[in-house]
Length: 125
Figure 1 (cartoon, rainbow, N blue to C red):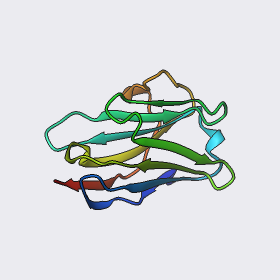
Figure 2 (cartoon, one colour):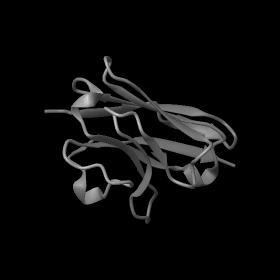
Figure 3 (cartoon, rainbow, N blue to C red):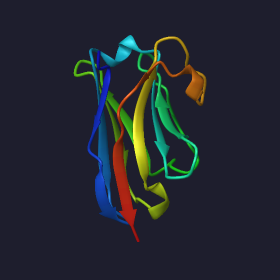
C-alpha cells in the first residue's frame, strides 16, 4: 500500500525556487513525524527538515534554515517543502519519509517507517 508520494521536483538555476509536495494516504496527523531527506550521488542520505504533524513543530538542517519552509495541510494529507534561494549544492534526490512511532530531532533513518519514491531536484550554477 502506497503511503507517501512526492512531486514537484525539477531543474532550476541557482537562486531559483521549487516547491516539493508529499501526499500521504490520509491525514498527516496519522504520523508522529514527517521528514524530508535528500541524497546526492556518492553521498549518504541527509536529513533536511521535519515536522511534528500534531504539534506543528518544525525543524531544519543548518544548511537550509532560512531558505526552506515546511507547511502541511492536514485535511489534504500533504506536506510541502518550499525551497527558495536554491544553490547547486541542493541538487539531490529528495525523499519524503514518516514515522508513526518516533520523532527524535533529527529523525534517524533507522526509525523511518515509510518512504516515498523520491523526486529529483537539480540546481545549475
